[in-house]
Amino acid sequence: MPNTFSSKSKRKYHIINWKDYNNGLCNRYNLDVWFNPKIINKWYFKPKTRKPGATKLYSKTAILTCYQLKCLFGLSLRATQGFLDSLFRKLSLPICCPHYSQLSRRAKELRNIKLPSSHNNSLLFALIDSTGLKVYGQGEWHVKMHKASKRRTWRKLSLLVDPISQEIIDNNLTSSHTHDSIAAIPMIAKLPHSIDAFWGDGAYDSSNIYKILFDKGIKPIIPPPCNATLSRQNFRKQRYLGRKSLVQNNPAIAPRDSAIEYINLFPDKEEGRRRWKQHSSYHLRSLAETAMMRFKQTFSDKLKARTLQNQQAEVRVKCSILNKMIQIAAANSFPLPQIN
Image (cartoon, rainbow, N blue to C red; front, side, top):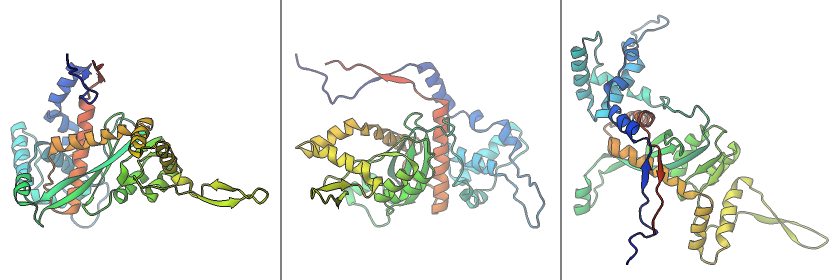
């Protein structure tokens, strides 16, 4: 009888808290979660001191709530205004939605909002990866049939993910020409010193990344390139024996050299890289790709805003929504044993 289960077959998982998880999935789009009485009380701006000139009418909370509902239901700015105004009339609320032009002007205020989290600055690990979000251009079918045109424009989204809670720690949206290692530096600089290990793919094999991780005391788990060589130099010489001692002149690169030495222990470099990934638990980095898949499945791979500042605000709000969705409904699962 042929073996129906191979070593490469997809592993199945069993969800323990299926009832709570199922109810949480329904509550993710419950308006009571995103629009509650606390938000209504903080809808209009209340200045603490009077200053000359016109004051803001709507608070930052109101702008954030409008953008959350806009991204949650995939609406345009005009559709968001019409939707909220009709909702307020049905509920007989003494508030109104900001004009769509005002939402567009004040969107840049949301670029640095704090992402909701459940770890309370007690992070232990961090994963990073990047993906592309389309601004405008032809669809995938047109590209497949007629190739991509010059007007096809993308932005690069870098996500820093907590592998334990699956929440997004930080994000950075840059142009498509920005290298992954450069886009990651401002996010790594904000990491707390409680982080023990940092996972990234080969695109983050940069001296700047190793340096900033070394200064924070974080262990990097980054695969070196296939043609990587040791960075150590033999520059100390013992006079009485004439031997050279190996001295590490750049301690920040020591984890990279250790990975190269481990890979070189095997005659086959591909086998060595595979063994190093298993030994260092490198495959945990795939959870960052899961976060990107979750982002695109929820909000698609397209951006509605046209300026970079508004695009950064749009992505930040979407990351905030994803974290809140995870807190509302998170699956508690374990892998089922594979039958050979």
